[in-house]
Length: 489
Ligand code: NAP
Image: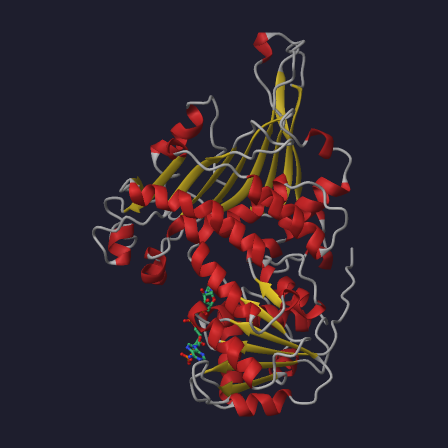
């Protein structure tokens, strides 16, 4: 199967923070892959910007190194890499000063092409960048800005940030990235739901027992300890990534697959979320396991605060008050230093109303698993007769579609979320980006949960590194006769 790669229109992309970790690990390797795929027109220009003084040649050398380090084994002919590097330039610019802005203005002047500005810097600089882009005449109505997470740390800060950006740019110029939305399977979630007759009639409280969303990481906080300790799993993962997944799984079919129709439906999901009761919240903090402490320190050691109360694990039972989902629990779970790296959405259907095979046939439920990582794909558990002459014994077998296997060739190639989203920015398609009101609605739901545990002086429960979180997380489901689906791949 060969996919069609349609080149985007000529563009200039300025990456503020072009020397930073995100630019080197994700943005630039992603752009290179699109270049190799033939999606980037020859006129496209990428301009890295940061305070460090260096010339274009030194920047290109740095980027070539990043391709080697973070390309993930991706190879492309040397001459293609050189051709890509030729698209790159660098300017020393201070977001908080005047340095470099006149030069950038000169570079961007009079070109009839798409202009995009990627704010891959601390959110504290977003306002400074937006203000200077306007001051130097680059915030015209066709310009686009891309902003990274975190988008605020509560409703108040998110509103202020939205207000600051809105002072210089219209909403249709602002691309708030949540890279989870760029994952192939996440988009497939919409294709599966709204492109098939099979699932949608069953996609409601009448037929679905419950839904689980798990995003498990094996890594700890690593070098991000200082940042992470001020944030925690609720702000870092639940408020954005898990809520976006919840929206896509729970939303009504939009009338059209266009940005505002999709985002209107997602917003309705967030607004239908009930407040979460304290006994439906489990917070955890990983601890080192004996013999492994030197290699994998516990959370408090890693962040350098022996009294830290920040959670590295969250599990929540969540309800939506709407016609479709009333009474169906959604269980959300995310954590660091867990047993396996796994992101999965699991839809557990209800029992058949009556078993004609009698009690000895056991309880069998259809389970639809949507794997985001690793091995992106979809599995539907179906109940069949166990083969052989042993009578009518039932077993569950998977109908499995692993995308990498099912879609051989170029179409099956795993495109990284970032490269897909950057191309969407250039195409001017905001469907997979969060709108300002969505972000604010997400914080409106999240804030009271955080304030609640702060008021209760809640201390996260310790869990062993390499486990699946505190036992309270298992108990959250067990007391209702349910269990987490394992995170092991
Ligand atoms: P980083 O490694 O600390 O890089 C920051 C970049 O900003 C550097 O290029 C730095 O270069 C530049 N910078 C700092 N102050 C500046 C100023 N006053 N004017 C112009 N440039 C300035 O950070 P990062 O990890 O790449 O993260 C960037 C953004 O992406 C943050 O908002 C972060 O939350 C978000 N994000 C990162 C990741 C990730 O995996 N890294 C994931 C999700 C979201 P100079 O010091 O030379 O100026």
